[in-house]
Length: 273
Length: 310
Ligand SMILES: Cc1ncc(C[n+]2csc(CCOP(=O)(O)OP(=O)(O)O)c2C)c(N)n1
Ligand SMILES: [Mg+2]
Image (cartoon, rainbow over all chains, first blue to last red):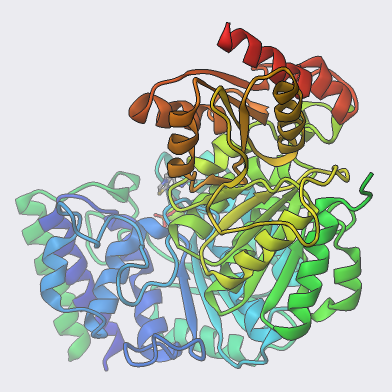
């Protein structure tokens, strides 16, 4: 699979989902798309076939509002039929605006920020206790880092030396009300996590090759959990959405949809060349 | 008088289970001593997780363990577990439907003079209002054992509240009838039905005896299963009686009294009294002193019965 092209393919699916549903978190979906693409298509051992088993990798989307990106990836992996995406956020649908484990492929419900890291720590601890060799992955937002509970997990992950755990911060510098530095300063994540006993890798989080390398490095780290600070662009892929706080959960108009689709298609084609 | 606190029985049962089942895991938040779980932690260090003073991650980590096949029991003072980690209980345990058993120890006002920070007089309301979360308040050590054994067998989340101190026995080793999620009928009465949970069951039984001596026919339901409330038992007892008294170690808002009132109003209206703690910080004192101050005792129940039957 051409991962780079696939990221743009997935973004088209996400744009479709949101444009149809008239709701969603497009900015955070687009910043996390490359991360999910690499995780599900290169790094993690999670398939529709092995999903029922404990002996596979585990994933928690702690920034649950980016569920449309997860839907796009899971659907492409064959966890559910493409028609299901037509029901996202519709009356009675199980495909709601945040992850829900009634949906095939989703393990834990989220949507309230600040839970996922500690949930992942529980999963990683269970793996250590049972001497299973699965790995656990969790993705958080950078605004999410203001939640105190994140730092309870930061402590526990370091304390228990969970080298089967790899967390990712989608470091897009934006949250709802503006930049993280304006709302609540989140600079120096590398130092912060290192102090808590984590192995830290800083990468371009919209570069699939850099991400893949980082995840591979994390697999080799012993005696420490890994934190990948994925430096991303919120709204990545569509020019007028990039780096705009307003696109956190704006729904595109018909013209914006057309323009966004055209840009994403062009980028997919270019990546395929 | 019995010297074994209900929380010690929980430790005993968990040690028995841990011995046979590697998946049993106990988690504490610097609370192994207050939870009487030190013997467990010392005997089964591999099946014990200390998270530090971090009740939120205590519950989230438990949910993660459950997701990967473990049977976690998160034990922490009820006051913190039911409020500081309420959202984790709601989202990670109930909503995600994980097999996490939350053990709230030293519940109600058993921390006495330590103040409202340490009281869990709202935990029934907090936990029972969460869809999918069950709430149990066992009355004595024998029932606590039966309850813990039953909970071990199922895979749904639950919150259990026990007190800090040893409480008088209601049952005996050989005579502790127990059916999961069914109230235990400790007596049937045609004048007044007394419905109690947790540490208030014993005074309810005492009151029943006192009323009998006066020629008033009283019955008692041990409603350890506050949620799912045994509504059939409530209706049956109420239909037989002229009036209903509910007593609980909990604020009168949103606890067992409120839940019973709803069942009565919908099914068989009866005059009733809901005895509980006030909507205010409770006075300082040992448990019994506090109970007596608020008439949460046999005399208080008898007085309420007199008033209702006047
Ligand atoms: C506990 C909690 N508080 C508030 C919200 C509402 N909320 C949803 S997304 C969001 C901003 C998240 O920002 P960030 O973590 O940086 O995510 P991203 O930029 O990747 O979208 C907020 C405040 C929430 N979902 N959970
Ligand atoms: Mg952000």
